[in-house]
Length: 102
Image (tube, rainbow, N blue to C red; front, side, top):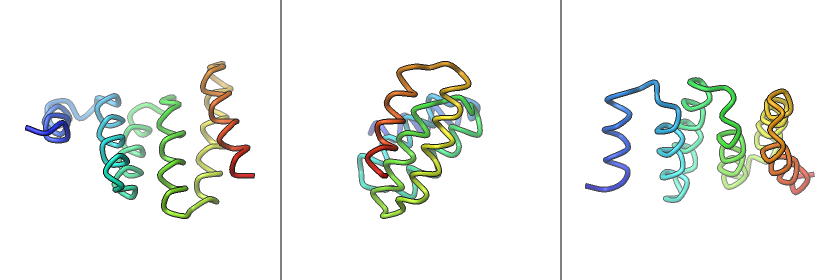
């Protein structure tokens, strides 16, 4: 059984698990399936709006799809959430990526 199959089964058992949604998004991104990755990042964020790295990785997938504007918007939202949550590491990484898009 592939990692994706295992993760999908886990999500079917508990569709409220933001961690599993995030991991599924990562698997899609690794496979170059950026639209699917973004959809799963959105599911993750719907379950946990403070999942800072879902913003970061959604923006990476948007950038890979040539959507720099969407990536910038996602990062700005994520930076706001990370700032609100006082997560210095997420703030730094999101800010750095945002600077790359400027």
